[in-house]
Amino acid sequence: MLPTIAHGDMLVCFGWGTLKKNDLVIADIENIGMVVKRIEAITIDDIVLKGDNKRLGSSICGIRIPKSSIRGKVLMRFNSHLRFSLIKRFNTHR
Image (cartoon, rainbow, N blue to C red; front, side, top):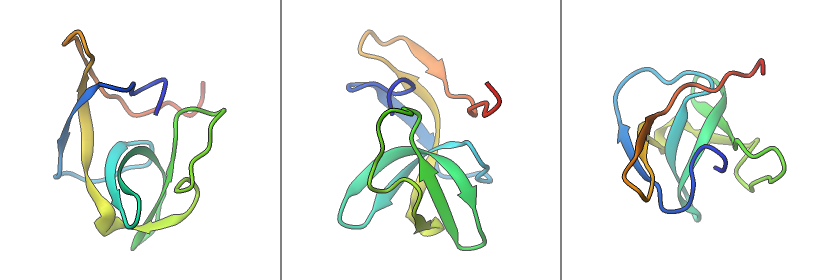
């Protein structure tokens, strides 16, 4: 999830609230494990995820996964120097 999340960052996440397009979430994907991605689209039962790095793709980006795979919404990150930043919804109009 570079440039938003770097290796070694610690995340604070909550499992409550309404999921919205462009929220950063933690998902537990079958046969893959836990991943951090951004919500690209939401349907009644499914969610489509995307990464923030436009140069690198992922095998789970662009495919429908069950909403039940989402473990929580990322609200804050701490870097390796224990500096923190709040996670904002991504602005798609940059």
